[in-house]
Length: 383
Image (cartoon, rainbow, N blue to C red):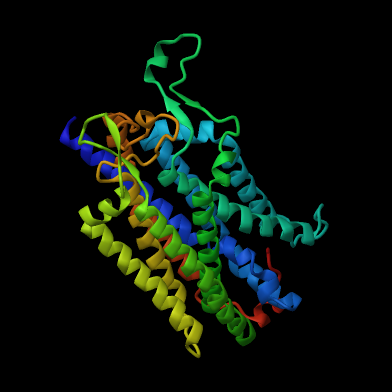
């Protein structure tokens, strides 16, 4: 295997990890949708919350689509195996995001078919289902999934299918694995914490600020407990490993713990991220007036999720273990696109900093002035 191919495979796993980390940060939109009834006690307060999130929901949806597209371009065998095999899980996630998009588009329009309350229920469903199921899907990067890979099937004219799913539930079985649910619920409470921090930053209303500060603490307690449990369970679990470029995969006890030890830079990234999130939570929950929590928490979240993706894919670790056939597990080496495709797509990826710069610019433009009650009452608002 050529050195440049190794570079591109590692480079694309970094991009996948970065997109996944940004997606988890942007899930504060979904988390905020589950806080409407807890934070808003009057219609005008709810209007402020909805408009605050309505200006950002497209970022989450777009990042999710780009995340899937990047997987398709760089690691197509994962895309065909997971998206093609665990399709009920992914369809449930996609459906929850579709009804979110429809809700923001039509909930406040006069004469809408279903009525505002129905669209608000759709937003609530997206907040619960979208977050938890995405966490469940990412959890399978550590717990594995029921699939089998046989590249010899390409020679079978009657059924040239490389990957086959071994469970008739086609992804729904991942939901009943408590380890996957543990991650899903952890991400859910994190999203609610970050949504509260975002509202504190984005809305200029003392009543909403006080209620959101309480929500930071209420949701941070279960988040911290669940997060520590997930980290402990993961670091103590057995994992799969392969020797260098060898295709032979074997079980290694405490695999992810040793990954953390053998990649100390990942450990530093993880600890800095955790410290940043905890700082945001503690200061926001107890300071009289502090609006910058979303940025400390957001950056910390990106660092932590990046480190978890690195633990799952680097250091000779199969990032998608097969619970049915160990040797079918997917690595960044055996599931990547051809060298030519990786090279071409890497050129396209150079546009990513410009895209991120535009997002930052658009975000700043929309948030130049905090949302106020007067603004909501004085004009017509889409959301």
